[in-house]
Length: 288
Ligand SMILES: Cc1cc2nc3c(=O)[nH]c(=O)nc-3n(C[C@H](O)[C@H](O)[C@H](O)COP(=O)(O)OP(=O)(O)OC[C@H]3O[C@@H](n4cnc5c(N)ncnc54)[C@H](O)[C@@H]3O)c2cc1C
Ligand code: FES
Image (tube, rainbow, N blue to C red):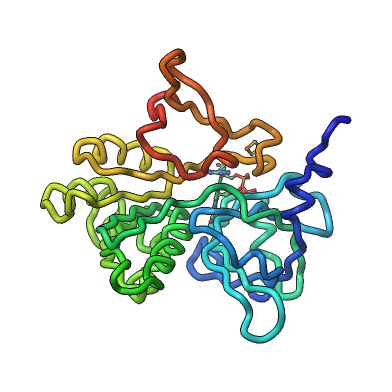
């Protein structure tokens, strides 16, 4: 029997209807949307994402991927509350920004693997660019919730074109992270790329040998971090971006080239299903 996307077991088991509780503009191009959904959505790993689309029509036809910023069981009422942060950049996100309280969406997820959080209280440096902040902030808050003996020391390096692109700064500081910011136009913090800030941070020997790097943001940013991580011999997990049509391995639209085994120099993985988080050493960064 031919299996369609609609009757896929993944869709059947993880699709649900969610309702908009609030949809608030937090910066000129950015919105925070809070959604009420089933309790199972609260069991997510930072870095996992949802595929969202309207329930009432097919415009846009394909769902849009959004990282889970936070999700928690509701204090009053059943189910859980999920938050996403998004940038309005095209048709789908423009439609999303117009959705008021009470509107409903179809959601599939949580999808993907998420970050592999350190088990011990080592040092972590987390780098986020633009809308790469939500999964990084989710990871910081998850680590901050741990007992002090297992809580890593966290430094977040946040980059954007201007100050208006720097999201979650106060949330990150409240969770105990040391936050440094970089903007391309110099409107806040270091003037330049966040990757330059990372190189400076490591050059100043501000991290221990067993530190780890975690990053989410535009592909050029993730690519630029790879040689820096290699130079300092630091494990680096990168959450990749890709245009996604399904989000769970059915359309093959999100392939990423990966180093092969002894017989093959190169192979492929799906960003939605095998990622979006990958160990940097497995990725063929120059092949994209
Ligand atoms: C795993 C994952 C998690 C994501 N999490 C978030 C998030 O938390 N917040 C958020 O704002 N966005 C996130 N994105 C990106 C988001 O899915 C796209 O911005 C969105 O699909 C754009 O839809 P649109 O219809 O508004 O724009 P479109 O009209 O589809 O595209 C507008 C512009 O955005 C570019 N674009 C589209 N999709 C992507 C993409 N996946 N990555 C990079 N550029 C893209 C297009 O090339 C085009 O230039 C995530 C993407 C992935 C794959
Ligand atoms: S988005 Fe369809 S296979 Fe990855």
